Length: 118
Image 1 (tube, rainbow, N blue to C red):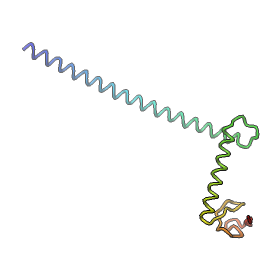
Image 2 (image 1 turned 90 degrees about the vertical axis):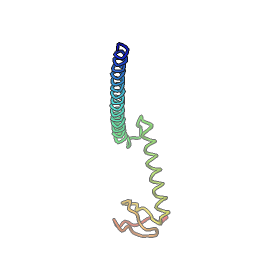
Image 3 (image 1 turned 45 degrees about the vertical axis):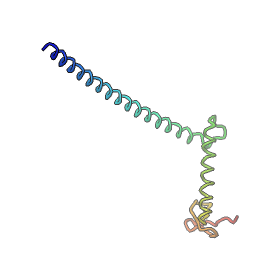
Image 4 (image 1 turned 60 degrees about the vertical axis):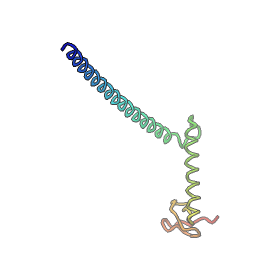
């Protein structure tokens, strides 16, 4: 009987240990998720700060941030790509309001501006 009591006690203790370890794993996963959520929040705040710095510096010729120039150039490249896509679709861009105008059109149907001839 002593042997069975010992096996039962050890089995019960092993069950408790397994539950404790499962709880520790659950807590660890929860902590990791909390850390990840907070790190994502920090990244969004960094991006927000960066956007505000860009907006404040974009019109300055002597900004100390090289990234401002890189972002401005990337915006220009995006506009060039959009213009090429419009050209491929047979559209031009109004020089006044930026609306899409059928290629060869003389006036913008949105604002009435004269289209430039290239």
